[in-house]
Image (tube, rainbow over all chains, first blue to last red; front, top):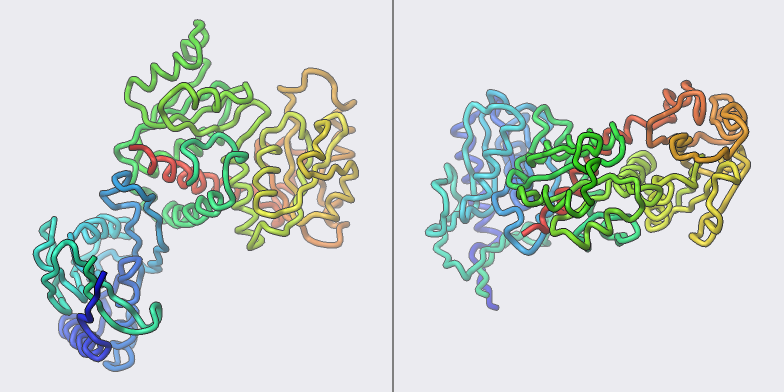
Length: 179
Length: 305
């Protein structure tokens, strides 16, 4: 197994600020927009973006939620491991809101498919957008594309993109791992 | 989960119980949404086979299954060919030929689920087998204690009433001990099984002493339908000695938690003001029952290939 650094902490920081600005451009004061981090790994990115928007760009209030998609996945009973759930925390209704899904890596698109079903349990959103830090091109199983993209990566199937966060893994860094 | 069937708490590991509880936490969040349903089990069919009466358990299982999007068929012995002389294995195999993946069964004979699991292909969930085990009840009881007191380990729990005929008592003893709680039983000597101390359970015949010792009292119903002989002189005398009233609770040094698996005989094992008091978590138990059964079914179904 070998790994190389895809993005360093400095590069990630620049990208996060760019993504925050792009969100700002489309949603201005975030009055009718909610950020939904997809469990388990999208919550770090969503929290970080919310923090940047508040602290660096003066957005007063952002509704931030975490959505677990385990029970909506399409691979139940198909693997060897039981799918274990994470916490869903959405303290607001998404009815008639603009929803932005936030996830670290977009790969097959199946997680986002599940998230699209899962969010319906919380109301009928006005529209849904997708923000992803890493977009793995050439590996999509479904017709799903991001609205906001941090970096596009051409990784083959045997490779894995590993996103690490300071608050969870000690440092901000993204690796491309060859197995 | 380390098991394919849920036949009794006896066959579970402590880690299984923790996994069930963590999964139930998520399902509890799901059933408190306005849309209480997830699509996980949409390609699973479950048969609820009840050879003995039940309202709460059966309803709870059925709701749990439906909220997981499973297809559900119900069957009760009163309207079945069992009355015409069909054997248990034949009955179940006939149901399974209609492509059923999981069987939830209640049966009056102890060990019926274990017997069935050896002879049929489907996953079996024991919903009560005679006076043997009622695992999902014990799981939801422990889950409710964990929710109310933060933890089960180290807590003192007394089970009061008809221990002899109670599957709830046995499953609770196994579950509580597995999680590190201390268990006592309390009731008339005639309704306490001989040698129960060999399970590591202390026996107390004085209710006030037992209540003063415990953090949680789980009050069982007198199962009149299972009492073949007279185990105590009169119901009134039973209530005087083993019934919990508000006055009795007020006289204790601390506030204890009152549980009851239902159905309650108000005025016999507990008075109405106790059942409806803040100390009682009886209705929380019922709510948690659905989340626990969703967790059990979800985890077992994930093993069906």
